[in-house]
Amino acid sequence: MITIKTFSKLKICAAIAGLTVLAACQTATQTAKVDERDNKPNIVIFYVDDLGYGDLSSYGATQVSTPNVDALAANGIRFTDAHSSAATCTPSRYSLLTGEHAFRKNAKVLKGDAKMLIEPGSYTLPSMLRKAGYTSAVVGKWHLGLGDGKNPLDWNAEVKPGPLEIGFDYSYLLPATGDRVPAVYLENYRVENLDKSDPLYVSYEGKIGDRPVGRENPELTRQLADNQHNDTIINGISRIGYMQGGHSAEWKDEDFYTKFTDKANQFIAKNADKPFFLFFPFHDIHVPRLPNEKFQGATDMGPRGDAIVQMDWITGQIVKQLEKQGVLDNTIIVFTSDNGPVLDDGYADQAIEKLGKHQPASIYRGGKYSAYEAGTRVPTILHYPNKVKPGVSNALMSQIDIYASIAALLGIKLNSDEAIDSENHLAAWFDSNETGRTSLIEEAYTLALRQGNWKYIAPTNTKTPWVENDKGIESGLNPQPQLFDLTTDPSEQVNLATEKPTLVAQMAKQLEQMTQRTSR
Image (cartoon, rainbow, N blue to C red; front, side, top):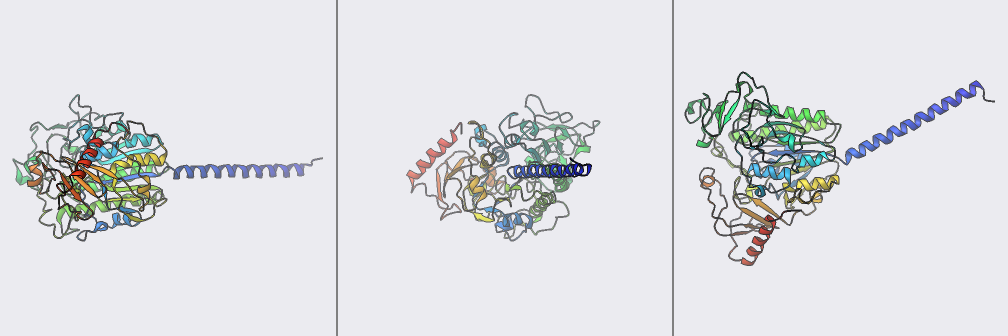
């Protein structure tokens, strides 16, 4: 017979057993969540604008200190031969997000009111990540166009299509660039702080409204500008294009450092419990360079040097937020630049006069716009404490491969017409001892091909006198083929094309084959 006392004991035992099973189930569930989370690391891409190979102290700079970026390099992999896919900004960011070379779309640097370059519904990095359950945001400089091009953009209504139509879940943008109107912030579809009683209009065809114009009122500007950058004055800086109204929505360049940092950190905090992708394309160190007074005088190089310090501070703040949210170790951080450096890019900000001994491109020839190495060889760092050991890699790497490499990490099979130029080099991204590409294309105003340490620049009759004369950069354009052995001649001083015609022919053929590719 079971007594009441015995029955009570049985109930207690059963309850304890149930709790034990429940606890075990909860533990198993939590473990499964952790395992799943580890298999889906967060991804943050810091995409600096116009940062040269030699502009960081971790890459040899001595006139400027970048401790926050250097910390990523010290605890991750610092690449010495990594490249943007193009030597200008719109093409390189197009390639990064699509895994496809921009020349296939004939993509050039866009005007401030250009239509959306990436068509809605296209294959993109954020749309691919959405398949794996990621939430994605872009915060910073966009410059990939907005709208469908069928009608002029109406800045007083919803501005779309935009980033949300190609896979991003949130966007906070400079609609184009800091030197182009409209000089306003665009959050998702709407211009921030726009007063309906003072509507915003933009023109790239001719002057509108009564705002002062730089070429007519140079005394109202803080930095003298070339003719291209000498239209509507906003915040004491003349821009490209004309802007009417929208006074309440105007940005102040000196506030960029907190506006974008805060938006990025809010996104991280909101999504810290699930996989997220943050694309953070800096305005720094693009012109006009107007770092906040917090950073003014941080270097002896004037606004350009101080903007590098500001960029480093922003990087540190976002990394601290990742750490605060407990996700830094499980976050893949890629730090890189959209193209090589430029000093004089339209504004007189003493970047040349105050350069001193600083070498923005290090030992490499050329810079932004150039087919020489400094056009696309950019500082590149991968930081991922959970999986990546610190090291220095000499592998030949390209930003265009981030797409396919992340897809491989997540086990996502790409379609035959998706990211057709992107290759899976996950092993090289995660291990400094692994090899990367055997060849890659460098896009400027002609195409160049790297095959190991051989560099071939295709001949062209294209001329860009404004690059040489106005920017002071060697374009690398030549009606004759150029061939360099970067093993012995990293600065591309000795053209070996006439000495090695067979190799020139072979590389020219390979370049043609690569440009004609239509599928994976």
